[in-house]
Length: 243
Image (cartoon, rainbow, N blue to C red; front, top):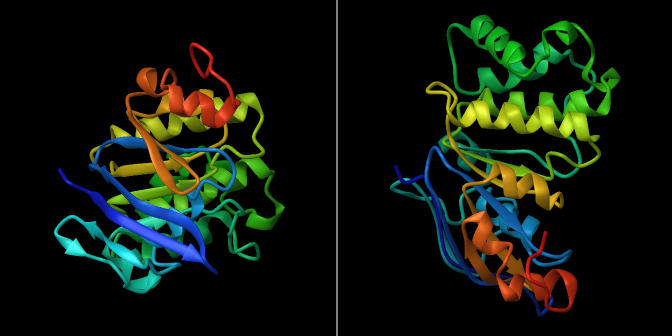
């Protein structure tokens, strides 16, 4: 099932080309990684997709709906949810209230049951009545994803979901994301940015690579890690494999 389509999208800032004719497709039920060196345009692309920034050329489609140029709140209601590099929670609200805010954006009934199910899925039940601002950092990351999934998105954009997590927390998050992908109720397409390349290689079905705003590779993890242009972009010299 077609989920997200980005078609020849370009974006510049004060003459600096941040994205140049970038295209990718993320079907529902798949996990795509978006990688590239710092400043390659990854977060800019997520901002264009989610309506935070307008694109100058190209189109963005969600299913059969052209969402190019729509406001971010309209895009969210149509079915694209996202998290950010810097966690954005309602810190004065409890964990349950944060998830409820996501659920209430799309549901009119059964809200308590949905909230409880999401808290359980992300191991947040014990924190239910805790203010979000008082949570350990790793738990805040989980909560942000749970709240986003509360909106029942068709596409979930995750910007650095494992940033600041230790190895154990990253492994737990990886398992949770895998479970969501295979879940009939919450399953959606995902586009994930992360600097932890090992996590991306293990988690994603396909990987799209940007460098200086341009696509330099796309394909299965085992192919991308051996792609000469990708190795050159990250290491500055040729090796047999990126990892």
